[in-house]
Image (cartoon, rainbow, N blue to C red; front, side, top):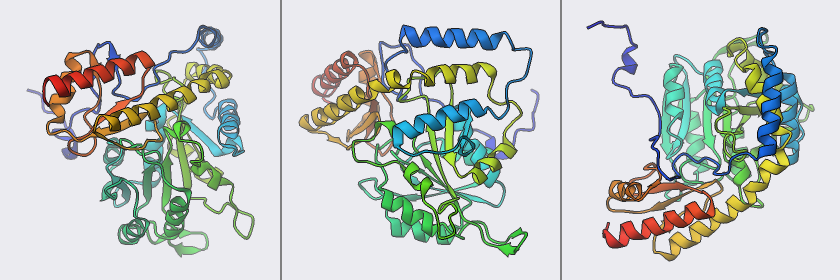
Length: 388
């Protein structure tokens, strides 16, 4: 047998991925259940056709038109006006996060996060040879800011990743907590970085992962609001803050693979150093721009998905389970003595959800009303008839 020089730390590792099964109701990977309308599909097809005519040329490697369109969208969605230079994009928010760890992580550097949280974070760290450290959340999945501050002082991380809403719990971070963490992260990054004015400590880069941000309940703010704050000199108050977003969830464009990030221009320019040449294809750019031109139509589905989510939480509680308040498009619920048996029972009835999060709990994402009705009926059948 041929022996290949796989990195020792990758030995025995399996590729990441949720089960991909052909079942009638798929509620396991937090997709938007509504496909794009014929009008959106038509505009995308025309945009791709135009792009195809120039595929002999490389695409615009810094894609200012797309970044400006994303900035315009964020101004409408969050009320925060940013310049296009403060926006970055890549093939899914996964690649955006990888750019962050490539730019700021690496050997002898640390990425800090708080569990339970998104299971890809340690893989971003692993792939960039960055040490990954976690600390626990409270029992209700909120953050103990004092404990976070102590962890920052102790670990001096280069990058802190905080999901808000958190996956798999759906928990959003209060803006005051984000501010406290940003202040604690000042000059608590890797020590002894040489600059033109001598050797000085750095700020930790704080990434707020808002992949599900559009689903937050009314009154729950976005961390984007903090990017507009200035210090006494008129500069950015939080140059070490980055907010990650995606078109996969609320936009219903998971197949597009377009994630993006908002931050100070200084931080964005550092990400440009590590991006591969022409990493966003001309077809991806054309598709994303066409989809963004229909932002009102695509975002109109969000309100109905929020209502379906809140109704699901109420229903689960009425059945006697614990269901956590969610600002995402999914709900964590349980506990079950044998969650694997519940998962399998649902799958046997044509409903696929996710075994993830704390022991005994399951996560279900919000589908169409018909899909949710089938989920509810299947869950009752599994837990009542099978006595699981």
